[in-house]
Length: 84
Image (cartoon, rainbow, N blue to C red; front, side, top):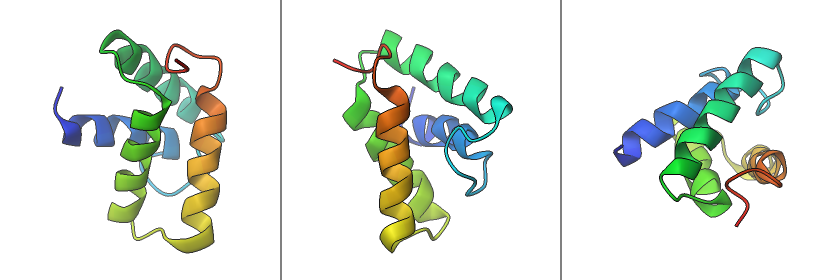
């Protein structure tokens, strides 16, 4: 999968908008799909945070809001297949 595909995929965790990451059950399912696929490809939490940052910057999220969401992403993926 290419970088832009990962960015699009993790965008599902934000409702493909700028909603809080995995804040809704549907968004959680999309975040979990990202984790499953990314884990199989050998990606880790740092990759997820990087993809989330790129996604959010495309949506013009910055400053404290950006940092808060990146922390949510990192916290969400703790204990998953990305936590290595």
